[in-house]
View 1: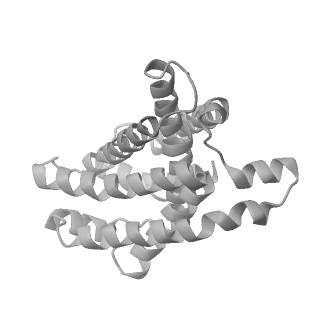
View 2: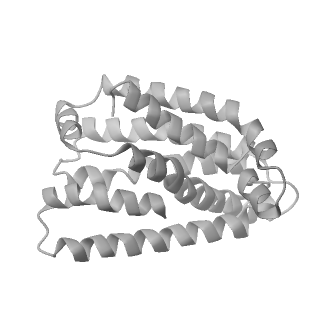
Length: 231
């Protein structure tokens, strides 16, 4: 929720200023906080309720709650998280070369603090999209296709990873539209491809190593983008 608060107070006002809404900014910020809070709570609940039969987990959080070794739970996630983060950062850097000029110009004006990128992007988005949505999609595939028989097949996870990644990318389109852009084919391609590929990597490391691995990968991708001047 800290990521939601930081993003709402630092980035949402910039988008609202460009949208020229007739409603007071305070009302819109309160509505944004409430909506995001409800979605985040729902995602947390879905992950807790549905992850266990799938073998999905958040090892560090589980270790912290049980009082066992947090470092031992985190250590296996460090290398895959680092590699996935570097790969995702490379994708963002490569996508920059194909970005429409108007997107580049608007991105230069939009100020997104590092804290918002790391807290909201690195943690909040992963709770929403991986712990919540991807877990739900994998559970539905296991429940409806496999009829809850045996260990979930890899196809359940692969389909959930791909669909959650696409939805993750689509979820960026309202912000693009709020900035006043027409969703032309080149802008759609840039936003969808540039977010789907990292989303697949984040989903894969969540499946194989745990939720905190996805946190780490997403945060490192943002750091790579920041340090390289992409964002």
